[in-house]
Length: 172
Image 1 (cartoon, one colour):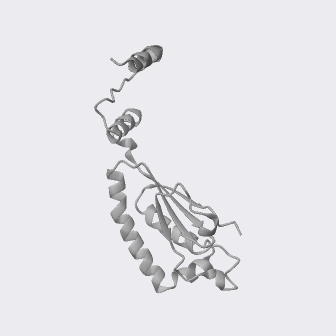
Image 2 (cartoon, one colour):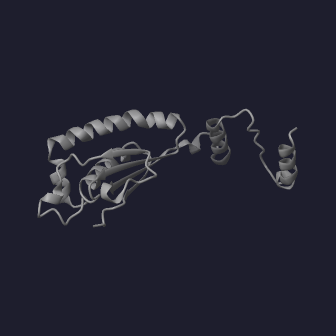
Image 3 (cartoon, rainbow, N blue to C red):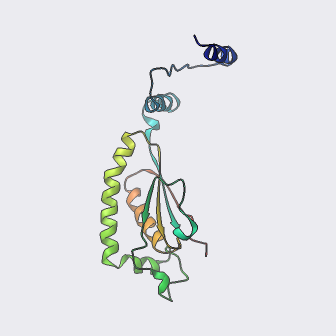
C-alpha cells in the first residue's frame, strides 16, 4: 500500500470508528457516488428531484456566472422606449401585455418551452440536481422579467422545485 494512503488511513482511524456507513469509492464514478450518497441520505430515489433556478438579468450588469443556460431576449420589442412603460418593471401588467402582444414573443416562447421540454429530462438523467437558467435583456428590468415570469408558469405545471429571481430589476 502506498505510504500516502497508509498515512491517511491512520489519521482518519478515529473518525472511522464513529462512522455508521463506509463507502468504498474505488469502483465508482462521480455519478454513481452522487446517486449512492443521495440514496443513503434521503432514502431510495427521493433525493433525485431537480431544482431549477430561473433568473432574469441585465447584460449591462454582466452575465450571471452561475448560469447553466443563458437566453438572450434583447431581440424582442423593448418597453424601455415607450415613455409610459419605461419606469415600470416586467412585473407590471402593462409592460407584460406590451411584451407579450408581439407575435415574435409568442413564437419565441413556444420554441423556448420546446427546447426546455427536450433538455430537462436529459439533465435529470445525467443526475443534475440544480439547474440555473438565466434570461437576459439590456437592463434586466422589462423583457427578461416578463419572459422569466412566463417560463415560471411553464415550470409550475412541471411540478419542479423552482426558485425565481430578478437579479437586476431594481438597478438603473
